[in-house]
Length: 397
Image 1 (tube, rainbow, N blue to C red):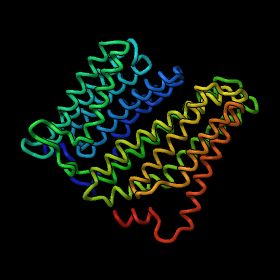
Image 2: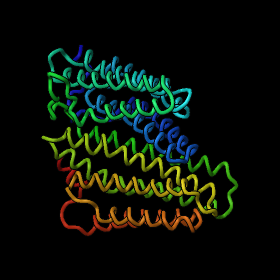
Image 3: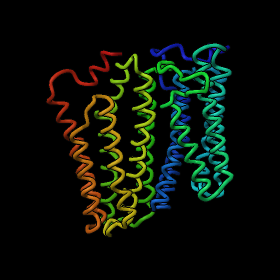
Image 4: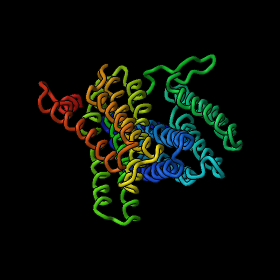
């Protein structure tokens, strides 16, 4: 029975409609996360939003790793994914009060997702004595330990909740770096995961689309609730151009670069997938969430000077987005991207100037900076010698 629950191999791995259906929950979760930051524009609110985003990301990320192995056409796997989807929906519903009355619902659903998924991987989808069972059981054990801290934090309140949840977060995010070390058993082999490169990269690219789509939703919802004069209409256009440029920056170069590198890293594919996709992509998503909030505050008050918290959010979005791409390029090639590094500095300078200019002007300067990087990427691809990244990827497949 267990063999029928797993995919046959890399060549057969395609993103299925069930996986896309599962992702719909995370459209809602990302929207809830953006609203949480909008309603709590402060350092404390930013910290709480960051933790919520990291929890949402970890539940989606590990499900993606699992579905890279499991066969979505199998009945038990389909049922598993639908149950995880329901739990994810309840978790997303709890996000606005994740630090309040719905804390236990939020973390309870999260812990249930992690334990149910990896319990299935360890005890139903893998044979005894196999590498697959050992790996899944190790991860399950780490989730049990972290889950105790998540649940304890959900019961506690105030500073105790924050401390317990930070410990739980460190355990969750430290597991892949520690290769799920267990006492007396050591670490899991770095090559124990069989990563289907095409499927894996496509799943993360689709999550970026989800986050960008949420930005469009937030822009449209904000615009429809305000009177639209000329400046407000231009602010809507500006918000759309900003989102389109974020798409351009990622899918025009970084997505191809990371997928090409993942295909080529056969011996270190697990480590590359962990570093670039599991860890660095959440920074990218954080940049999109902050950009959505920045677009909203600029759209709501285009003629006014932004308050400090709103200005930081508006600038933090592009900075985080560019920083994530810069680090991805460093991990892929061993070099930072000069254009992105310069653009990060330019965004920070715009933030300093933003205390004395209208919100719309801040938005224009940020978008011009992003467009400059996207334009440079396009120029560089057209003028550099040798095969394009897309050609290299096609040859590798």
